[in-house]
Amino acid sequence: MSPRVRLTVALLSAPVAAAAAEAPPRGAHLHAVATAAMGQAVRFNNPYRLERQLGATPESLSLAAPYADLGALLTHGRLSGFEHGGSLRVAFALSGITQSVVVPSYVLLRRWTPALEAWARVGAPYVTGPNPNVGGELSLGGAYLFTGALGVTLEAGVSGFYGAATREVSATFVPLAWVQAGVALDWEVLP
Image 1 (cartoon, rainbow, N blue to C red):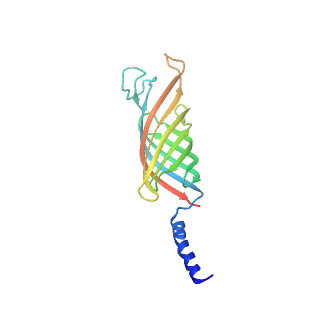
Image 2: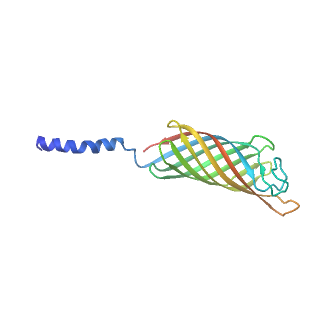
Image 3: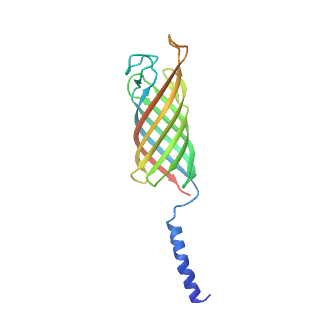
């Protein structure tokens, strides 16, 4: 190859090599997020006349006890697309009746920018006590990362549980809407 051809090839391939070096890696990767949050829920039905009722009837809104939530999610997928995985969360009531809830969930996550990621969860919350119960849950949340690994999180969702009978009905349904905010620790294993 002549020196002139070698110089032309080198000049043409330099931008391609530089772009390849700057491009983010492609392919599947593992992504883990740990969260610690505080939250508050509103009940849309209060058949048991629990504390913090916001109206005069059992159908009135009422506030649930504030709670702490610890969670972890693990997803797998492409950096430039949606990631699928699972989540496990544990929430503890901070006042009132001692109660904890364990929530295994399916998670769909997307990283929109290097600092912003969002997820959707579909789960089956299990109330461990004092009266064990299983319900359903849908939520949307996300994290804004100040560094590559540390950030803040915000999540909102709805949950629903069937409960015991009252004088008025043979079985109760208690829907809740909730919001929680906290911190997130993000970790990725790139391809």
